[in-house]
Image (cartoon, rainbow, N blue to C red; front, top):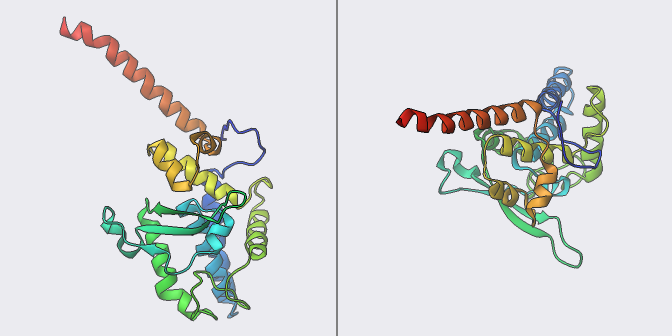
Length: 233
């Protein structure tokens, strides 16, 4: 159960829902491949695409417009090798302005691992792999928004998940997890490209467990502060 201050009906995934989505996407790859069908490559692509969207807190179009060249090293994150930063070139644009660009730093080791696996091991087998698109389609040069929406909706409905969950719910959970994990709110705001902290706060749907832990820490700190004078005496 999650509590969110946002008035909109849309919400973030729970951790269990996210894991179920990723597991189902992986199972689909195994199922299709087990039947000897060629469709396992697009299924693998879509599984990696969903994980990458969450791993970097990306919007739909930001995700599909990524190129293989949109990753690089972060001097402060050498453990991520060639995937320490994701360069978003097609961020949400303001009216009359070009797409907003930003750099999203890799925060989880598994994020770099899945992108490396896709680019190095699986993507080369895709048709149109000679193009720049990170997610080439079967018939065109780049996977389309309709494909993203239909695949996401199919997996969500297969699992019987809440229909209010959409692709953007991955981004909402990314924000929530960073906040729950103790990352600085300004860092989180910059990661997702929000101009205002208030926008980021709307995305934050912390779990009841997180609120309970936060309360416990605050109460423990209060008790410790109250006991300090007595200890000195």
